[in-house]
Length: 189
Image (cartoon, rainbow, N blue to C red; front, top):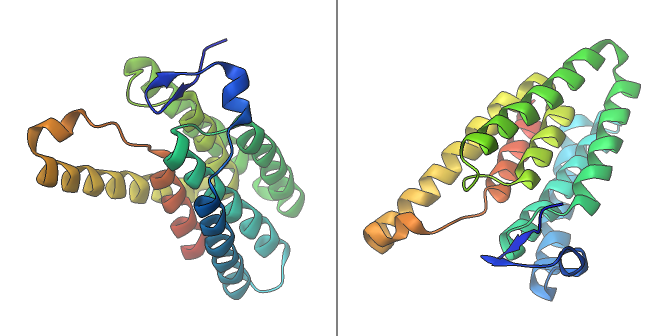
C-alpha cells in the first residue's frame, strides 16, 4: 500500500482518510454544485440522464475542490461514485453498456500507463478519476480530456509567465482540470 502525498509531504493513510474540505471550499462546493445540478436539469430535462449527470457533476465539483486543497483524490468519493455512475448508465442505456465500460477501462488504462511512464506527473487518484469520467461520458470522454488538458496547459503557461523558469518545477493538481473538462463535456453532450 502506498502512502499518499499531501501538499508535498508524505502522510499516513489514516490521516489522508481524515482530511476534510475547509469551510470556504465546502461553501464553494455547495454553490458550484447547485449551479451544475440546475444546468444538468435545464440541459437534459427531468430525466434519468439529468439525475446521473447531476450526480456526476456534483461529485466532480467535490473532487476538484478536494484535489485543489489537499492534492489528493479521495477513494471514499471516487470509487463509490464510479460504481454508481457506471451502474446507472448501464441501467438507463443498456445498449451502450460496452461503450461505458470500454471508455472507463481504456481511459483509466491510458492514465495508468502514463503514470507508469512518469510517476511524478500523475497519481492513482487521477487514474480513478479517469475511470469515472469514462463511465459517465462514454466516447465523449475524449473531449473532456482535451478540455482538461488544454486548461491545465494554459494554467501552467500562466504560472511560467508569472513565475519564470522556476515555476516549471511547481506541481499543480490535475484533478480540477479533468473535472472541468468532464463538466464541459457533459453539458455539451
